[in-house]
Length: 119
Image (tube, rainbow, N blue to C red):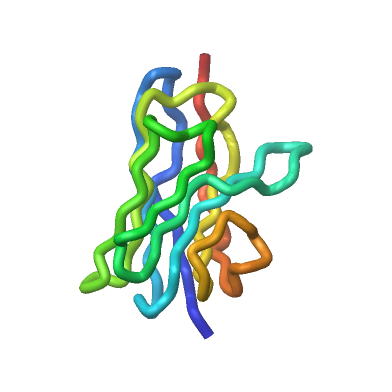
């Protein structure tokens, strides 16, 4: 069983930055970030392969968000810059066997961390 714990969420003004962290019990998986806003379905944000050589981003965050990982620390990060009110959501860390933008390819999920961007 893989355990994932997110941290780093909070309230920030539009244009600001936040860095989300995800502590994992192992580092042998592809890692992804997803988000879910109230009344909306969970959507893909970013993914990174085990080697960190492959990274995917949703078009809505490309150029503003950066995913990275530190396998020595079993951690994955999401640096979020130029935040917009539409980025407001609960952000989830996920672990899976494929570097994918599809939620069903991820087997393990964290509890989520709230990100709120005020206008």
